[in-house]
Length: 174
Length: 92
Image (cartoon, chains in turn yellow, green):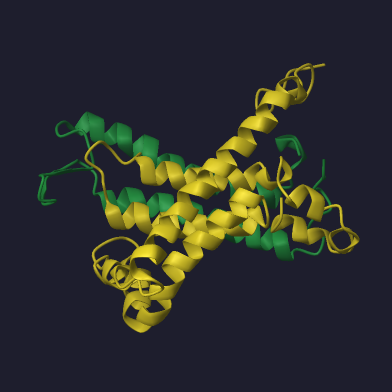
């Protein structure tokens, strides 16, 4: 069988060769990413409650960035929502990844958060690829690999009759 | 799903979005290196003030990457709402 350079799983190579370690590793990455966000949200709640005023001030300061129109629009029009949603959103995203529930949906919001952080922090002293971009890519990886299916509750949820009857939910779970 | 099982629309969306990300990060990163010092998008001092910028405006590079990410997100939403969504997804 011919080797497909674009996909080594086609033909003589088999991704299942790395399966036990790869599965564990994907779950580990998911839990660490989840804790990262859960801790960030929880620490904000413990210090400021659900009144994280730095959130809307941060967004208003992003005016000269590529996400400026969106960030300033949110910062000026929904300051009270931002104060609540930054810590709450971070905690919910983190909990989703920690437990492996609705991982793809949670990671989508994680990508949204990290896009704002990456552009807003603009920490480009050592190049464009920094920890913020890696965080963004980590959430994208959770979506692509359906990380919730490995040692996560999404594996159980996806076996329910409800999800089998509505298969497109797997794009939010998994 | 193997890449050779993707439909034309899937391929266009995936190649375009990842192409935008690679263009912003790698291709323009090479351009920036060739342009000379400071070899990074922005150099700031300890106070956070920008003291030097690279040959390519960071707004252009981050804009390309964000456009790629946004396209990927739209593709995901399309997969969620498309009539045959979930058909190709397998549960282990």
